[in-house]
Image (cartoon, rainbow, N blue to C red):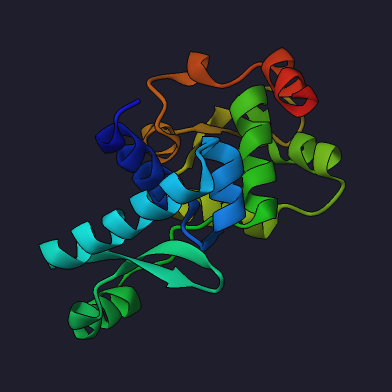
Length: 176
């Protein structure tokens, strides 16, 4: 792999992480020699600084992280206060996974699988348009059926639901 490709790999790892990554973790993941990794990280930091764009790479908390350029802090602060958080809580992810794999599904079935009330989480997922009401189940009380949306696919970068990992894929991943 050429230096340009190695720097692109490091850039992708930093972008994906969203938080500081230690030098030792970068070394373990990339399997690069320490001297080469240090040289490439220094070049990457310099490249971003020289470009003077909206993103920088900085050494933070004994690691490396992609950060926004402090020159734009005023606008970013304004943006942050005007937009809702895009991160999902663990209960929201758990509920979303259940809906994605079992859809169409009613709230009682979700709650049976999670063993907790899911009213708030379902409301949040509906508000964020990651799930939708697909109709009503032909059962006493005619409960609402929930399923995922196009926004769900966009959020997770999926073409369609067939791209969701299977249970075998997940077990293989956990074993590795």
